[in-house]
Image (cartoon, rainbow, N blue to C red; front, side, top):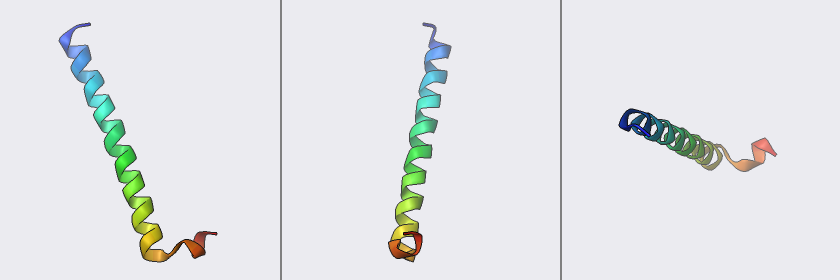
Amino acid sequence: MSSTSKSSTWKLVLQLIVAALSAIATTLGVTSCMGVNQYV
C-alpha cells in the first residue's frame, strides 16, 4: 500500500469514529435532557 492510500484510509476511519461518537453523544444528551419516557 502506498502512503497516500494509507492516510486516506485513516482519515475515513477517523471520520467514521467521530461520526459515531457524535451520534452517541447526541442520543445520550437528548435522552438525558428530555427523558426516555417521551420516546417509549
